[in-house]
Length: 457
Image 1 (cartoon, one colour):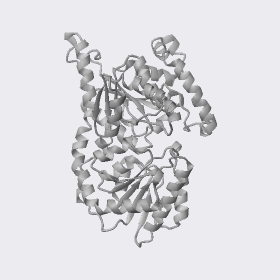
Image 2 (cartoon, rainbow, N blue to C red):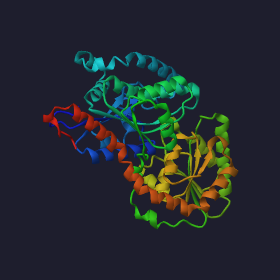
Image 3 (cartoon, one colour):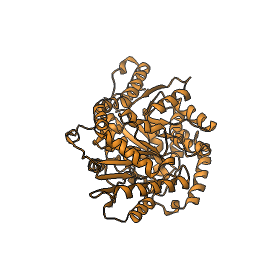
Image 4 (cartoon, rainbow, N blue to C red):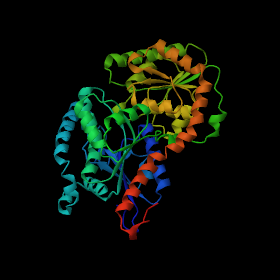
């Protein structure tokens, strides 16, 4: 139902992870900008993936998004990630806390709406949780920022999927209309994980998928549901696919001299695979630096404490032992990263969004896909294919061959991407336009005639 005359539409943007992953930050900025364009008077509230129990430390995790929206609140599901408290830096303590939170969350799932509707009981809760309850209760429409629905192992899938579904499931308990935007869906192996995802995702009236593999997986998963599915560009392209004329004017050298590298200490394939990845990077970069005039730049695309890359970075600096290897320190902003990627001749990317950043700046890319499948199809949609060396199989030789292959077709690769970007950036708007139109049309049908036209845009 539309809000009463004179009150702006309240939109709750659900499940925003940390902006310290600059790919997520680009998605957040893109989504908010598209909403502001479509519904300029709407009130936008972001609910973080971090629980309200970690307020106010979670605000630092959303430092890019916070100035763009009207309010930020914590999530319903308690979290125990190492922000604020040193206690959560102890892995065993985090594990025990997370198991306890799962059990408590199951029991509280139907209780939160009762607390929200009962001022006397609600007043007994901590103030951050009161804000979370009221943000959900007052929402007219919930736009759930889809994430990666997968896990490192089949055994972990139920926990990982449950953690991604708790806040959306809570929106359904409150009876809110919900749309999921920009998700990647892997084929899940655990029947409980598949059942949970099907149950919650199937109650969304709209789901957009950002890659063809995910669209195929979601089509099978939700085959008898009424949910509308759409294959649409990644929301980061609404931020990154600009009209910078310097990209079109850029000329790459005959050989790559300045090489960018993004790192991921991925544990999904075990320590042996991670050691092999590090060894491959050391050997490949050693060969690259044998040629005079070459330079390597280690670029921090993700600076989350839970996804630190310091061990690999220090290993590379120690093993390569040359002043022609530079580590960029700090936390570069989205715009600063765009400039950094524009300043290298080629990027070896173990972060999917670092590849998107670079391609949007006219920089050719070789990827090392750590979680193969799903989201990596975004690059194919951009016109960038055959870039990949799988994480679990990477070697110095395979990296060298792939770099040579990509560099040989660099002009065609960059031209293909640049030709597609304007249309992709425009199409990304549909991630917002379609669910908003479905919601407004449905709300109109339930409104009395006197209220027709009381829209917020």
